[in-house]
Length: 269
Image (tube, rainbow, N blue to C red; front, top):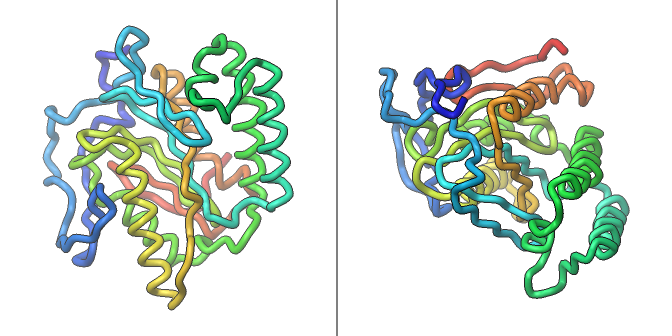
């Protein structure tokens, strides 16, 4: 399956960014009129490449594990700073810490959560993500907090950030921007995932604060990301993103699109 062209990552129909500031992958602003390659098919741009267990993996992160492998695709979630109730977030962290402690993982140790979790058996790692990652996703879908991205103008700024360097610095697959969080499938082409995510959040936060006449934190500093391990895994994430607004009970106030062909509006479950 690794060598086959996946339709979700094949056609090159780029989106143009407006003639305004656009984010570079170091988080600084630069002027750009259009930030996508021309609309011709470019076979030099790689199609979906699944995780290869025989190739080196870099695991990074402060509180959350981030598995990185060059050329692979990632499912990324990032959320507004106030998207979770404080009591829930505190309880989630306490319960997660205790669950890990019982399995011999001390997130305060030098190795931290990333390396500690990586040492656990695969079935235990799966249980961890089902127990804590899935719970977090369900809570986000309850749409707590200010939900700044329910506003069309604010949400469009996030979409611009996501789409701006599609086919230049990354391949952007399916994405969804909901009132308090966003999901995307992304394949880095040069800069690493951390820089790409920082760019998205830094630029969109700056623009949202500017248009609202406000200052302060917009996004949570750290994102959730999952390395896509195979084509079936990719399809599940693609479907999850497309159906996320319907699961959250939204009929408006969201955008669902794709780096190759944009669309928006309700998604039929």
